[in-house]
Length: 116
Image (cartoon, rainbow, N blue to C red):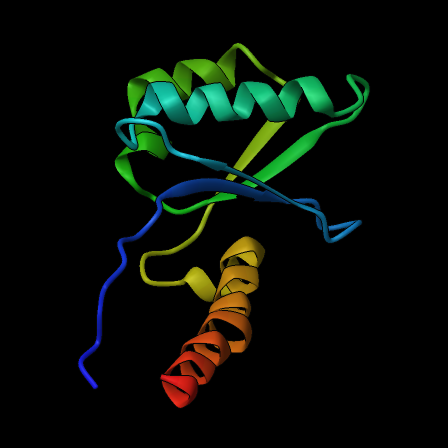
């Protein structure tokens, strides 16, 4: 049977390390600094204003641009931590999606192939 690609979805995601809750938002349009900071604004509005927010990011351009740096400066309760290159294994939300892919999506694909 030939593999059929049904497309991919790009999304922003945040994991609350205390509760395990994942907030994910499909990226509409470009994966750029403006859309990324809009996602951060959503998180900012949903978290108790008295709490400090720590965010773990890779070094993609939307996370390190001037626009994003200005956003972080204007939101002082946010503390950004950047992972080393090629170290997605230290980012908990990356681990969440890796497990989701291995356990759910891969199994669904196998089941689909079995019944086809």
